[in-house]
Length: 317
Ligand code: SF4
Image 1 (cartoon, rainbow, N blue to C red):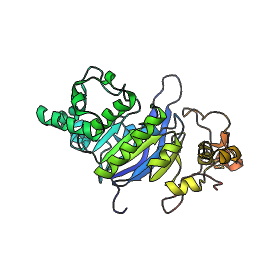
Image 2: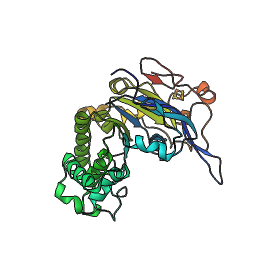
Image 3: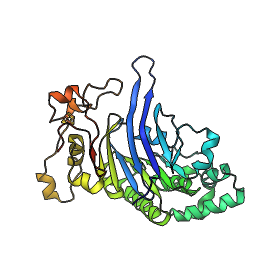
Image 4: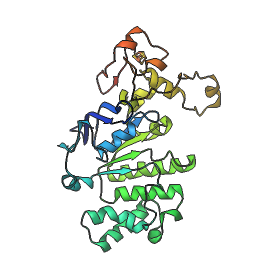
């Protein structure tokens, strides 16, 4: 892939004010690109800032600092009116399909809504909704049903159909399969991959499950305590992780071969991630890092590297 990125995120930062404690820096200077038609996996434990990053990209949250460029245009501070024409190219799929669908609206209304906002006529929007139902593997005749009449997997298909309605070029998928049964997860992942092939979509795929990310992504960025600590081509990162945190996450993925699973060495991290309200000095990972040395406790490692492969660690490898 070549040319300018479809999405360019630069130094994106989100600080939430707190009443009784220090402000919480949930995302701290995150930068990455996504090219047309590719999938970037944004991974890390719960609370690492990956979902907040996704929400800032689609402007559900206003960043404290940094910028988001979509198709060469800075959209960071566009007004709702300025953002409207771009909305159709930039959509989101949420984690919990049922809570992200209005229970009082029919599926026809839910899927048509983004089209009506874009000024399409009701009959035309309904016709498109029926077409999308078929495209995501649902029965178009079920358009007049309500979300509670569908299973979790079917509801997520409705969420995907709603995101597809306006013909987006980029979808931010925030843990799109983590609320689903394992067997259903595979079906939704397959659907998303088929849609990507057919429609040339790009995804930012946010997940904590590295085995799912391995299936769907071209590149991966690992987040810890609001920062990217390692990024690169998926194959390289999975085959040769350089950051101790990535190594620990990958060592926890179950292996398909039971014999290999019995003999593999698992890296168990001590404790929980620190609070972003009180991050440790130096490397944010040092209180849990099995390789930490003195420098790690005082100097923050920068994300450095070349050829699309970057790591933030004083002692990578
Ligand atoms: Fe571990 Fe030090 Fe690298 Fe941080 S900088 S990940 S503490 S080795």
